[in-house]
Length: 323
Image (spheres, one colour):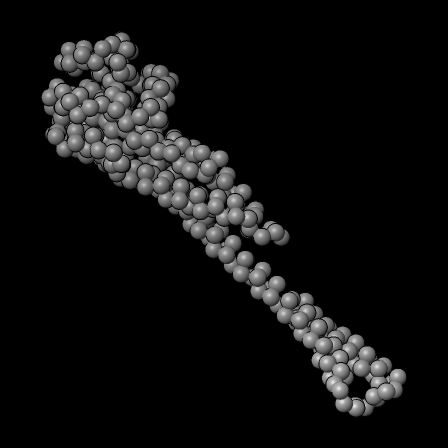
């Protein structure tokens, strides 16, 4: 049996009753009914469609997975598709849980694909704001959207902390490890996933605000406006983090290239210094007589030449910051 609730005249009158009793309650204009279906079959949804007069396209969208977050308006009801999100700090992945909702004049039907979408959290919001229950379906819908948007906000906030940790490693003395590179890639991929579920919510909530008369009176408008503001903040935050992670990765690659250039510059400079004594000793190692051959002063001349040439090169390279 799925979750069910019955509100009458703004008061929670019953919950946990069989779904078969929903049709009887829906006929009462003073009653507002909510019931939830987790991973329903096509036959289950078609039965609801006949009872509530739902559009065939809305029922088809509820059966399909990975729908884009949206709000479709039909004659007599609306169809809402949303995603709740959660961030796994261990793996850097974003988990999303989709849900759909049919919104009629006095009924809200939620359809979930799995238990990852927590209706318990939605119910907790309804219980905390019980004084708004007199607004009927608008009250129920606000609690659902509030849970979804709060999950987006919590996810992007947790990811922001991960991005701050990555920023600290960019200008560190040690090279970026493979684990840090993997985490950067996972964060960027997760931000793309989050963006796909957060960005369309702006359009969906905006549509709901413009058609607020279909879901409740004007007293609920400030609450939906607050949800819309949260959607905008989550959207902007997601976009800024996505750009920031991209900049971090580019900076990591630039720093890695600069570090490699510095190493090559130092190795080349030392190789040039070592080449000088090699050249001199190689010249004096020829099997032919040369100035100073067979005399002590010839040995000292070559030794002084090696020291002076090497020291000169060292000072020149240091002056040019090559060493």
